[in-house]
Amino acid sequence: MIEKIAYRARRKWRDVTTIRRPLGAGPAGQEKISLVLYFDYEREFGNIAAKDSSETGFNAIIDILNKNAIRTTWNCVGKISESYSKTISQIISNGHEIACHTYNHIEPLSTDYEKLFNDIGQFKTTFKNKYKVDVQGFHSPSDGWSKQLIEILSKHGFRYDIAVENKDQNHNACYLITTDGYLSKNTHSILRIPSVSDDWMMISKHLEPEKMLSHWQSFLTEKYYGKTIAVGFHPWVIGKNKGRIDIFEHFIHSLQNFKDLQLFTGSEITKWYQE
Image (cartoon, rainbow, N blue to C red; front, side, top):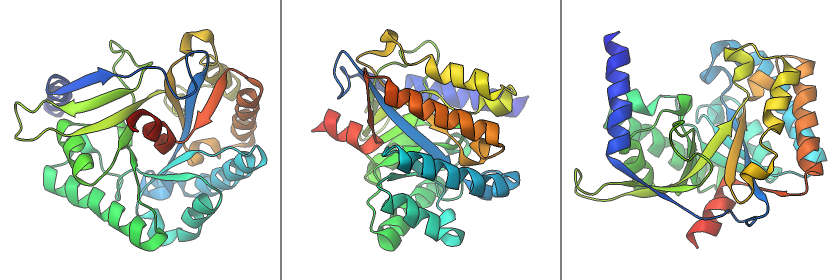
């Protein structure tokens, strides 16, 4: 109970000590949806039971994306580079973007400043040295973020993150998230791309694949025209069975057939807004 109270207090503190500046329509314009597809690539470093289904899901997803000529953003746990480096190279060679999901799959809202700073710095350095990739984006495990995370990301040269916004906030628009500059000596900012959905309800609510598909497709409506949104997936979740792989492929076909939509990577969205 005490831990829950402390966690909620930290969430409240981050909300009142950061400023959100909503931005305008996305790069696809007012009459279309600007959409980022992202993948939290964790393998057993995020969930020890996910090792086998991660391999199945990874291979199926990469194949489906290649067949449809779709480029996406992969939020990788850094430790994957130690044991599954070939898959990282495969992501890069197929034209997808690498983003950070922390090096050790740690939860930023519950991690002290020094540990978090070093973890994210290790990710940035490893991927620059090993894969020649200057990582620009970040997605937090458990969607936990904090004021100190914004500062750390800014100091390490990150330009954006993907996160779920609170229900009482306008989660249909990109934001510039800024530390307030009053309670800290310096102001730090990054772009926030709002995530409106992922595949987690198949785990948390035992949602059947067909209902999950309907939920994903519910965002392909006029309500989201002019907005920039993100929808996320986990290879180990998708790879659990053929039914989930099939509905993922069905969703990709839905995107291809929906004319009022344009797909982007996270860094492409950020470049458009910031340049």
